Image (cartoon, rainbow, N blue to C red; front, side):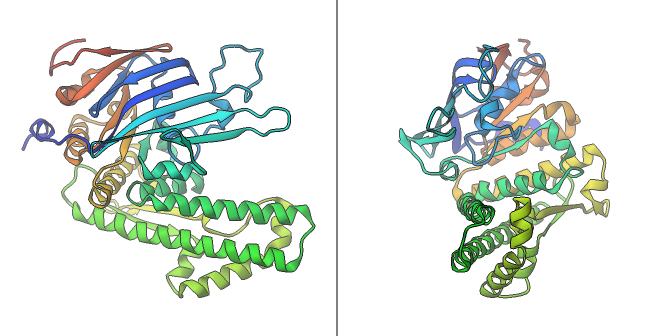
Length: 403
């Protein structure tokens, strides 16, 4: 069946961002964007602020967003006399899922005399205790040009990418990572203070070991589900077949011993590393150092040895496998944030991408300098023109019709 016919037969997204509000965020002093559940195409010249909108959506997920920026760096810098990190900002979105609307928001409050800067999370007007709460209402997966280096840069970006994939179909994973990070910070703070009893630090290390094993177990479960989803379309996708694995000490322990034994082993490792961890201010062992290993099956080599185009195709294959698993387990695919993706795919793969998005019932937010690569989506997508702090909706188009 032709790709365009597949696209036309797709279903409406079961979960979507239907309204987005920005205040003092990046290039936007204020923005109110009504989108509905359809896919969204943001077009405009480079530097117009298209990616800033995707970044605003990404801060509504646990973590530091698609650019990895510090919270204080996200505020609009209209006045050079104001020090960076001293301006508040806010992002709010209406999530529509299975006919139910939920208002979620994230913001930054700079520190002042007697207080520290903090991230504020709200769900339906109520303050939430952790950014992980957001993952229970909407999940995001993104792909940006910066991720062209994902397989050649350090392990941290690959690990975060994998954790986002798992969270898209297993929202509790975000809670587990949050609890692990909190326990890790508490132990390091105690070690660096230099004032603690053996009983106290051993108690914290036991808690950290429990959270580390729970996080590693969640990853291994997610790895199995991702492999299963990839296997379902082996040899049938326009994107390459992939094999995925994890390289981490706690994950490897769990594959060879019971969970309690893995906790004991990691607790002993923490005890042995106390002096080193205290001196360096970081934990030298644990699931926060795990790496994701991806293989291009047809090429018979690791992704890091593949071309840039092959690497991007592998990432897309993994994203859609995770999205399919999310749709099956939660009843809705994650919201996809795809920055300049059409410009880096040939026509066949672009059509396959659009068809997969529509067939999954996923809402995708695209950016591009030209609307024409998105023509196959136009009957079911909304196009917005972005120009230096303003966003204007373009009337619905038909294929071949010019803006």
